[in-house]
Length: 426
Image (cartoon, rainbow, N blue to C red; front, side, top):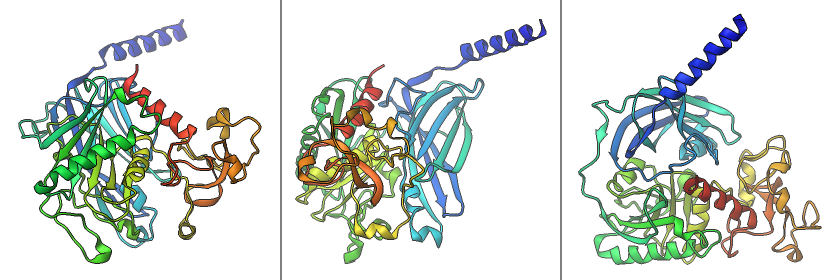
């Protein structure tokens, strides 16, 4: 009888906790600005500012699930019941930087901004960071009450000039992409809008985006720049632009990023958005894509169309790079034989049954020789994730491998389609 009584009490407590769990308020967005700082030996997370604004353009389904893990997670739990209300995976430039030689010599700090649906009552927010092999780095939990007087209300600000290039429906049902101008003066806004249209056309020329276009809204946001162009440190060129983007990130010539994420999100106040593409006014080749942060691509380079789609593959779906460069051999490998990459389009064969085993072309040789006759087949092609050996990609070529190949491979297409469903379907 005692065991039954304890079991009944446990069930009752669980029922009451579930019954009392709060619902989220989709009428407002909670924007949390953090600073991630440290070096390879120690990392810290600090909350800088809590903000709020009207509306919510994020997903309304699968709120307590994370389909794509990224290398970090932000989660919101009811403070009274502990119920998980919302969770989202992400990656950051800070975590990438921790892989560099510089991170062994000095400390640095990076801004990071996250959007969550506003809670109705007090919650616990947890941010955790993992390394590229999913080993824990640091975790930070803080309490937040929605009626806190120091949550900065961002309502009432005049939105930046913007035009919808695609409006398929309400933010309740669609994924909102904001394409933002970087390094375009007001006199160059027509050029920016043309570049945004070109980027959108390039994206929706690729499967599965083409067949699922009706689930997206795309808005072009014309933020004026004092200077025309962006910073190119290797040439001694420094421009005054809205988001301070520059090449030579981590001393890599073509890596173009911004660290001014608060300014980027401030520029979008009053405009529904969920995913961000920053379009840079420069002819130099380059770009970058950080999962659930932003895509950054150069508009006047001949490779703009394939690059912006490739980088969106990173920022939207956490697809991995499928190439390997000779220069990458000097860095510590991202992937090891005893660990299966979490990105959908790479495998070390540690747990291949969870990858694209079901999509293999019938009769294809495994591993699959990288020969012309195997073009278009789904197999196991060695070389990917910046490594020549021990990492395999699904196909001989893909948008995530080269600019010349016209499509995402079937494995990448499936990963993207699953994520679009995750965002837009119950």
